[in-house]
Structure formats: C-alpha cells, structure tokens
Picture (spheres, protein in one colour):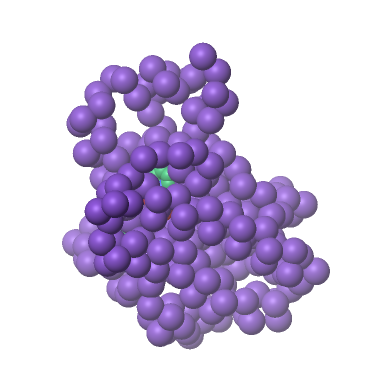
Length: 250
Ligand SMILES: NC(=O)c1ccc[n+]([C@@H]2O[C@H](COP(=O)([O-])OP(=O)(O)OC[C@H]3O[C@@H](n4cnc5c(N)ncnc54)[C@H](OP(=O)(O)O)[C@@H]3O)[C@@H](O)[C@H]2O)c1
C-alpha cells in the first residue's frame, strides 16, 4: 500500500475523473475525503462501494468556488483526521460558447469553479502542510489550456491560470516539503465529454495517436504517481496525459 497512513482531500470526487482518483488513492491505503456539489446519490454510492472494499472515505457537500465552503471543508477533514497530506483539486465545469455571445455568468461560473477553487483549497491546506513539512498538491488542468479551441475561451483561461498558479506556488512551497503539480488530461470518457462524443463519434479517436479515448483510470494513475513518495523530486510540472493528442503529428 503506497499511501498507507496518508490523508487525502479530492474535490469533485463523486463522478468521472475525480471518482477514479478517490478510488485509486483509497485502494493504496489513504483515507479519502471528497467534495461534491449536488449529486449526493453518486457521492453516497461511492462511499458505500469503498466501505465494501475496506477503504475509508467520507463525502462532503460544498461549492468549491466558495472560499467559505473550502475553509469549512478543510476544517472538517482536519477535525476528523488531524492532517491533510494530499490535495487533489479536480472539480471543474464547462460552459462552452463563442466569445461574441458568451454571457458574463458563463465566464464567471467557469473561472470561479475551475480556477478560484484551486486558490481556495490550496490556501486552506497550506498552513497544515507547512507545519507538517509535507504535502502533495495536484491540480487538474487540461490540454485545452495550450490549444485554441473555439468556444472554450473561459475554460482555457481557467486551465491556463491553473498552470501558472501551479508553477508559482510550487516554487513558494518547495522548501517546506510540499510538491505542487498539475495533470493535463486530453479527451477522457466522462459526463463532461458526452455531448462532444455524441456529436463527433469516431472522428475524435482518429486524432489521438494511441487511437482510443482516455479513461478516468488513466488520469488517476498519473495522480497516484504524483501523490506518491516516488514523485518527491517532481514539482511545478504540468503533465499531459492525452494519448499523444498534443504531439501535433499528421
Ligand atoms: N473529461 C475530460 O475529457 C477532461 C479533459 C481535461 C480536463 N478535465 C478536467 O478534469 C476534471 C474532472 O472532469 P470530469 O470529466 O471528471 O467532470 P465530471 O464528470 O463532469 O465531474 C465533475 C465533478 O466535479 C464536481 N463539481 C463540479 N462543480 C463543482 C462545484 N462548484 N463544487 C463542488 N464540486 C463540483 C461534480 O460534483 P457533482 O457530482 O455533485 O455534480 C463532479 O464530482 C475537471 O477539472 C475537468 O476540467 C476533464
């Protein structure tokens, strides 16, 4: 068990990539708290599944965009388990639309859910990680930060912001034994991509060198590595996990 004795907090853990991350961390021995926004049924089901596997997990409801909720959630985890070793900032949304018609609401919703949340939770765990002189922070970015997808200005801005933020706080926190990295998924089969998958069908696979869509487990494997002791000398990095999608070959 690579993470025995570790405490992890994962945002957006009830479905998709976050769920696979929760399962991977818990199966390696970590006690895992995860945050969801509204789908309490999915969250409760995940807790029950993990309990059947003799894993320890709790689900906490909150809006990651709210600083108050983030502080409250971190406090709850500290009250229960006394420390937080691993933070995975995974929660995210899309509200795609061309700039000409993008509502301010859709701009703000994506920036506050995807980017402000990362500030909220990183700041909330910093003190406890600094005093423990140990921490692993992994932020969920996207390859959309580095390519110009029409209709994703809000999303790309939020993920580009995560990349810059990750590098800066990695430099700030390195001396305290805290590593900060980001994982940049390509095209992963989750609820978030259902509409695009339905519209584009097999065309997507043809653009991916490994010729398959990514699975949540592919991303969880990368997160697990970055959370492990083996990754102690890696910080400030943005790791693309995209089946080669960003290689740009013909
Ligand atoms: N899927 C992809 O191809 C892909 C590619 C690149 C990057 N990513 C990134 O990977 C992350 C996970 O994506 P996914 O595809 O797994 O998404 P998903 O299936 O739509 O799941 C999103 C998760 O985030 C939670 N969430 C959303 N807004 C929240 C809020 N305001 N407060 C608390 N929790 C919130 C949801 O909770 P509820 O269940 O309560 O709604 C759910 O657990 C996101 O950051 C996304 O941008 C995904």
